[in-house]
Image 1 (tube, helix red, strand yellow):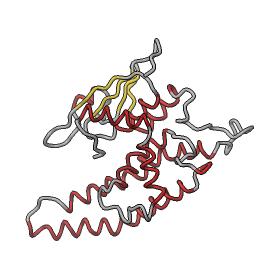
Image 2 (image 1 turned 135 degrees about the vertical axis):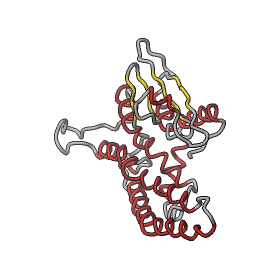
Image 3 (image 1 turned 45 degrees about the vertical axis):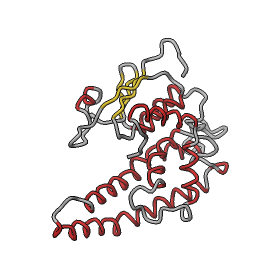
Image 4 (image 1 turned 180 degrees about the vertical axis):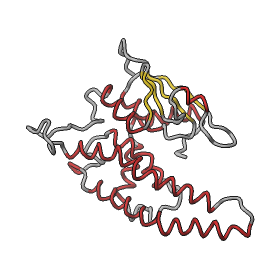
Length: 255
């Protein structure tokens, strides 16, 4: 890691079994000095450690502190850190097309994709995956045997009526976005890894790993998406982040 004098102290507040993996990857890619402070979940409820509320009022992870500033929400963290510490990296694509600086509509396709996927990840895609997680919990709930047909029916209707059609729409959309990426990709915004790819890494790696019961999620139906997920794991900064996660938690698991 680089070591600039007078640079603010950066601390990643790491909650076990959280989506902080992406921020750790970001810090490794930015090559900035940082510390990790770890927090445990409640063994019975799975709730975040109360001590996290001393860092940010919502008490959730990921959150980082940069000097005296506490920054929460993954998308904002990616934007803020990339803008201040990205230097000449490709994490933020070039914003303006030649001769179009400051013009409405003058942004490059790469930049507009970058901004879109930063918001799309948590705003549109992750809520579906969370509903899917809840649906699976309902289906597998420890209830008396005579109630199991009821919970199975609720989960089944939710999956077939809401989740499956939405998953088909979203993952077909992502497959098309990878197919039409600028300069042929292979990343969502073009030829280089961006902060948007880091944001998208969690849901993409999750569904392509066989998690849950996502409709038609296989290499034959979504070849670009599976290739993209594999490509992200080949980043050297990603590998370093995984090694650190293993050192912290003893293993690396998305959920």
